[in-house]
Length: 264
Image (tube, rainbow, N blue to C red):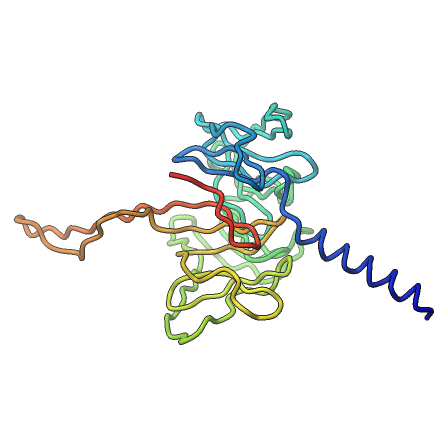
């Protein structure tokens, strides 16, 4: 290999890495209770007016309006598509749960394409190509093609149907890896809080959030307690009833540099 070719290869490799680390042009931005989009300087480009919005993919983004309409917009905020189904839950592995009349459930990806058609009594995202589904009288796990991954078992819909949730043990005396790397960043956990590490295995975004999701399209979604809350320990009132303080949780997006895209 000649020196010239070697340096050209280095140049293209460096360019690819730099491009991969580039922040998106429009970033979901929360202002109070409403969502819109801002640039990397936090200048608002699309006015916050949505209940929820998601990262742009190929010039389009999914959003949910204040009257619970599920739409797709372009980079100017113009509605390019209105979906007939309802948005159920937040993003995982670049996918979202949808339903028809809050009954038949399915999955779409962040571009708006159908991954699993809305025909199941319930569906849970277990991984990029693994879904736990409930059909009349049975439950099992399948992939996108409908191939059975875990054998279906008898199941009645009035039985308890709570997906397994793994909580941090809080025993790590230093940050522990919580997820595999995605876009060069991995979720780490430390004493019940979450942050991010890069491929050098060093924490780049400190563990200060109550939840953190894997990076997707240059952004990671985090959940945290609303600042300034006064949270008391559970107690019994004069009637002997248990009183528990409701903790208000907020969410927002961070980039790989730790910049937070929200304001209260």
